[in-house]
Length: 318
Image (cartoon, rainbow, N blue to C red; front, side):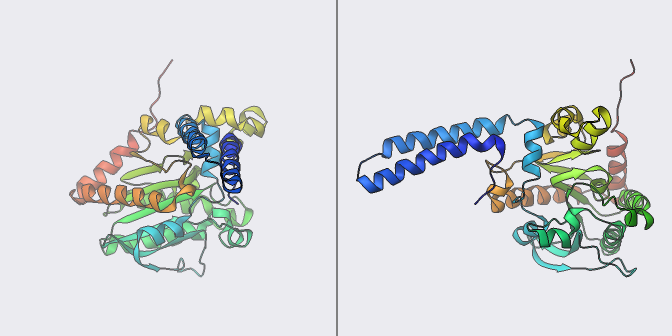
């Protein structure tokens, strides 16, 4: 059974009435088609209204939905001939970051993403989508490979943040992310990044220094999780909804602020409602971006990328 979020419960109640009417119609032979259609229209209208006015805290729930498509789902739906490339060449293969060579609509790309699991066993394998330093070093190796052979880079990001454990700190978590930021800024090939679910802190940014940064409609992108922000500001993680509102974490807010370049629409109900349609929308946006970026010279590409990130972080003096 599909997981129902709190704010979706009225839709479920309407659907129950529709199912009851259908069963009554079948059992009694009564013609209830008009009533059923009326309820179905009511459910559809309510759903459209609901999803057009979601609060940041509600988008947060959708972005974290257990059934939301993961990196490997998108690879399967968007790519042909995917060949995974393992390891950081220092003896470790962090499964939270997966990448390799593939084709999108026949065009070669290096596609790299953060993978979460759908079951407890898978989440343990992928460390709940929280990469360790070795994962960022693996990504860096693939970036350099792509750069050497002039292959565009596509990154898909869905993480609550880089792994915060002691072992990760001991093996250089901060420096691994920092090196990725520096080296991505210097790549001579086009880079397209999409936040597909959670895009939290440096863990997300370590794959997001790109020429085009996009977000799925119900994803979020932030310097700190709303719960973490609320814990710091108010010493109360339960105030995450207020923090989510203040942080401007949604695709519409970030598009307006110039942090991202495009919002990719999701099917009604969220990406988990229709994997294929979501993947097709992402594929269209990726191909369009790569077509535009491929027209630029290396110098133009690097200059635009530099200017893009330098323009962020504006402030007003009081």
